[in-house]
Image 1: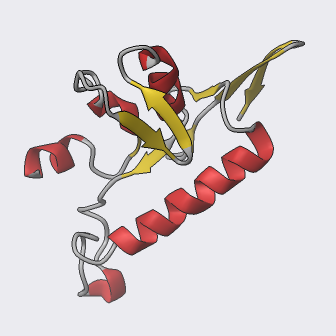
Image 2 (image 1 turned 180 degrees about the vertical axis):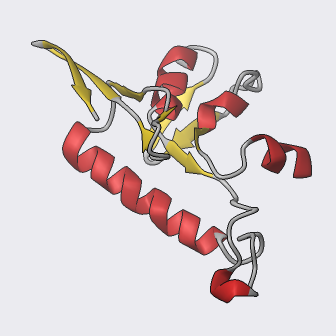
Length: 129
């Protein structure tokens, strides 16, 4: 677990990076109300997973209150869950259930992170920043 945390510390990541090898099963796979068959709908399932946001543990940030914790391990999971629920609701509201992907994040000189949302529509490809 520590190796995973070290690799992805203080980042917002796409969960699908961890789904390279899906189990070969006849059991249905449910993702937020959508049912998939891994054997016949693998690309659709992966496309749906690609459209989800995953907020990971954070560590090595300035101690809270100057002497408090510098990691959210053990208490930050509820914050991240709430953030992911809110993010999913906003994505569904503004971009719809599927047909979009989160582009790679790029770090700007100012230290802020910029991402692009790509959505395919009948009129072409829409880029949102």
